[in-house]
Length: 276
Length: 69
Image (tube, rainbow over all chains, first blue to last red; front, top):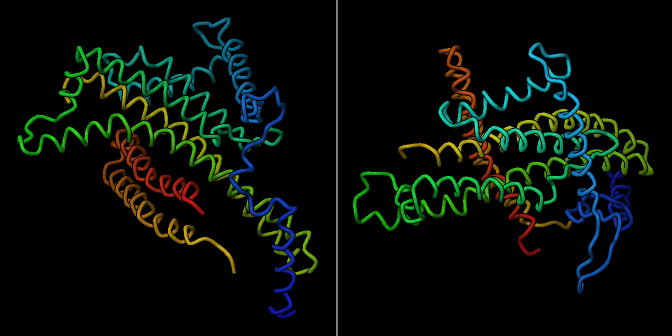
C-alpha cells in the first residue's frame, strides 16, 4: 500500500466529522441531563458535572463518617487510611506552609478542599463516571472564591483595617518614586493574579487532560471505523497512548489537588505571617 | 488544509513554561542529589515553583479557546 492510497480515506475520515465526535470540542463538556425550566433564554438544567460533584460529596461524607465514627486511640484499618490522608494535609501542607503557630485552624478547610478536589479529579479516569468536575470553570471559581475570601478576611483582620492591609503588602525599604508601581503590582497580585491563576490552573489541567484522553480514545475509535486496513491498525498505538495518558492523568490529577491546597495554604500563611 | 493559527501560537507559548518547569525540577534534583536530607524541605518549594510556571501555559490554553476564531 502506498501513502497516496491513504489520502482519500483520511479525507473521508475528516469529512464524517459533522456526525462524529472527533475532534473533541469545548462544547462537549456541557452535558445537561435534566432540564428543569427556563429563565429568559437561559435553561436551568442539572448537568453531568453537578451529578458527579454531588456523588463525590456523598461518597466523602460516607467515607469520613464511617471511618471516624468509632475513632479509637489504636486505629482500625479504615481509620488508619483516613488518618494517613489527614496527616498528609495537616503536616506536609498546612504545617509546612503556615507554620506551627496557627496552622491548626486552617486544617479543616484545607483538608476539605484537598479531598473534594482529589476525588472529583480522580472521577475523570474512574470508568463509570469519567468526567472531571473541575473541567467546568464554575466549580474551580467557587472553590477559589472560598480561598479568596478567607485569606483577605484574615489578612484584613490581622492588619486591623483595609488601608493597613495594603500598607502591609508593600515590602519595606522601597524608594518613594517606585512606590506607586509597587503598590499597583502588589494590589494586582493579591486581588487579580492569585485567584485567577488558582482557578485557571485547576480548570485548565482538568480540561486539557480530559480533552487529551478524548483525542486518543475517540480518535482511535474513528480510525477503527476507517475503511482501510492500515488505518485500523493505527488505532492500536492510539489506544496504547490513551492508556499511558490515563496513568499520566492520574498523576496530574493528584498533583493538581495537592498544588491547589498547597497554594491556598501558602496564601493563608502569608496572610497570618507577622512580617512581610 | 484548515486550521487555526492560534494553535501554532499556543505551541510557541508553551515552550517558555516547558523550559521553566524543566529548570525547576533540574534544580530540585540537583539539590536532593547534593543533600538528600533536604529533600523534604525542597519538595513543596519545587512544586510551588512548578505550579507558578505552569500557570503561564494554562493562560495560553485558556486564551487559545476564548480568542475569536
